[in-house]
Image (cartoon, rainbow, N blue to C red; front, side, top):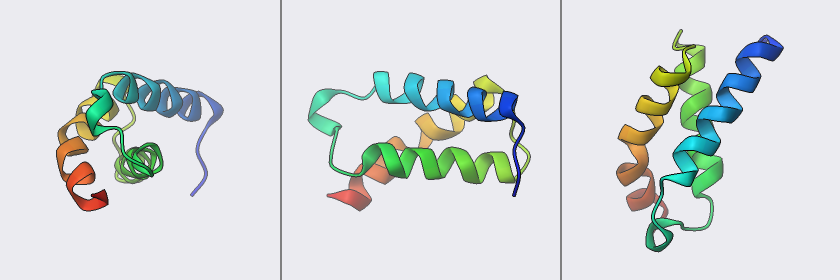
Length: 69
């Protein structure tokens, strides 16, 4: 799938925002990559707004951490 440069920048900003909100004790190896994958999947399903991407990824943090630990 091809994304516009604007959407890529939005996805990057969303990733950084979500990661900045993760407490240090939850920051496990592979978390950033898994959150990025979550954001990519959301974009592939039509979620292209910054707020929507942040919300989608933030809602999945606990499940991702649980999967990685």
